[in-house]
Image 1: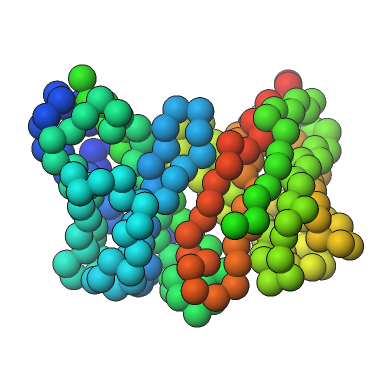
Image 2: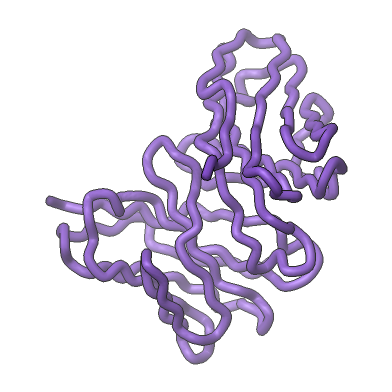
Length: 118
Length: 112
């Protein structure tokens, strides 16, 4: 079946601009996650959705970052007033549950969006 | 949070077995040991997980030390497609365990 898809695959923007990154999770997965990966590092958690609500947004670096999932499926990560330090690969993942048995709930990742802020 | 320690890099010859070690000396009794890998230009993918007993699946085997302070991911016959960064991750039971905490992982190179 179809995996997690992310668009665009690459995004180049100028400092100060606004960007939106989209994630289409696996159909039927209630949990959705955003991670950010800088060069040479492992992915870092940003935010977790259970259905439509953000259950944990503790990883968002500051208030320029915001994410939504209005219908409990597709999610959009929004970054305002981009800075050069925001350049990274933004990864989205989804899982069946995310809750009760989350310690064994496999996360399926998309290919990521590479964001470059000039 | 319990942390993991992995070598930065390893090399293997194609079609040879590979043993990727992970130390997690502060693991708690309810932490699961997960392995994910990340192929070049792709997102991470799940490999295997276990709690106490050794585990096998179609991708790999996971050997867990009796005291659970270390584990080893075993690829029985490395192929070129197995060249990736391998991450060893501890996931606690209960609330908050949805978050995967990645370290830098082990970069595996496979030599033809």
